[in-house]
Every structure is written in C-alpha cells, then in structure tokens.
Length: 79
Image (cartoon, rainbow, N blue to C red):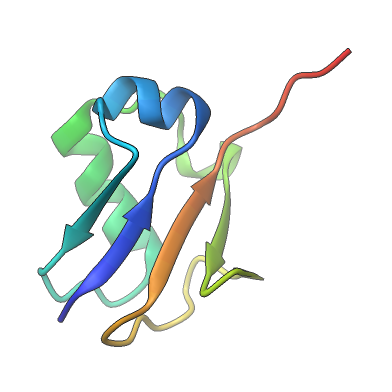
C-alpha cells in the first residue's frame, strides 16, 4: 500500500519534511498518525488535529486505500 502524506506548520517543522510516502498498510488515519508521531516525535496529539483524505475532511477511522493522499491539519493561529 502506498499513501502520500503532506506536512504543514509544526508537523513540517518537527518532521523536517514537506511530504513523504508511506508503504506500510495502515488501516486508517489514526493508525498512520500514531506511527508517524512516534517516528517524528510529533508533539501534537491526534485530538488536536483535523485529517483530510484526498482533499476532503475525514474521520480518523475512515479506511485508507492504495494511492490515498493524507493531510494532518494542525491548529492555526491568526491575528
């Protein structure tokens, strides 16, 4: 399975990457984020993020499919 991940804001800073491709068979975004959080030492917990699959907001338990694009959306500060 191949899933493309894009990183923004703090997740981009903490991973040192703007994107990466996962080849492990994660069943849903929650499982993928948990593995990536451990790999990159992300400080944000899952409940502090939104998730999008193929450019649409999704639930954390939405099944992932081959070729999906996954984005974890951190909180945004503004003024």
